[in-house]
Amino acid sequence: MIFPLAIFAQEFPELQAQRSRQDFFAASFGEAVGYGYSGAAFGGGLIIGAGTGGALGLRILYAVDNENISFLEVNILARLYIFGKDAFSGPFAQLNIGPVIYEDKNPNRPGYGNISAGLTAGWRFLIGKNFFAEPSLRIGYPYLSGATVALGFSR
Image 1: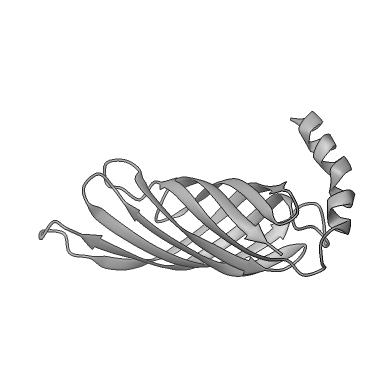
Image 2 (image 1 turned 90 degrees about the vertical axis):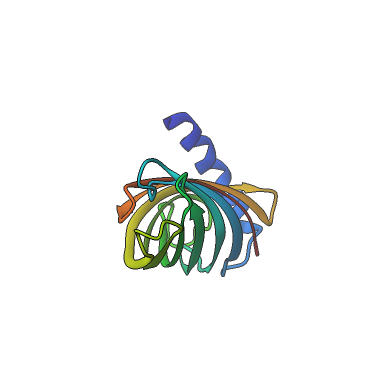
């Protein structure tokens, strides 16, 4: 694990020189998340944000579990890149908070809402100058955990 980190750290200053000081990004993602009553819910969404060294943004997820319960989660995100104040890639930690709305197709369980809050850890891998892939894992409430893969554009 240390070896890939060392290689990425060596390449990082080169990539930094190619980019502007402010990073705007947008990505679509797929996710498996522990919202389901009897298993994971699967879905996708959109992430948009801006910042260098950290980022503020919005994360929207729509997911459905195997019992046809759908979930709409709209989170504000605050992200911090581990490599420092000028970073826009590499490892990151992220705080997500916002509402989640459940819609249940079963008439005995009506839809309802809740607060969604959690922590995410991930890594942004640059693909060329303006594209990236971003795997991440998250834990929080009311879901237990989630795994995400995002593909996006930044400038």
